[in-house]
Image (cartoon, rainbow, N blue to C red; front, side, top):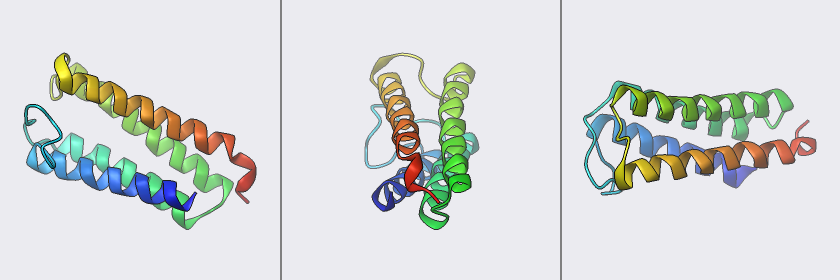
Length: 116
């Protein structure tokens, strides 16, 4: 779980940077308008990593999964409000990122017994 916690934290930092700059390492085909909401989504990802790294308890795993779910719902919100693209390559990246996030939730849930 240590590795996953670090990955979640790093992904979150990347989203925070995208939120304030509009792009990060040229990942997006078209830069987004800087958005406080996207920065908040990145913070959710960071917090999920922190809870996973620091607590090692079941309640921490639940918090981690809730923060990841909030990040997924935030992606939907950004697309619905037009802050994120609703078509094209960048939309596909949003969908793939959401699927990866769901995979993280499933992985944490499948390792439930490893938490105290």
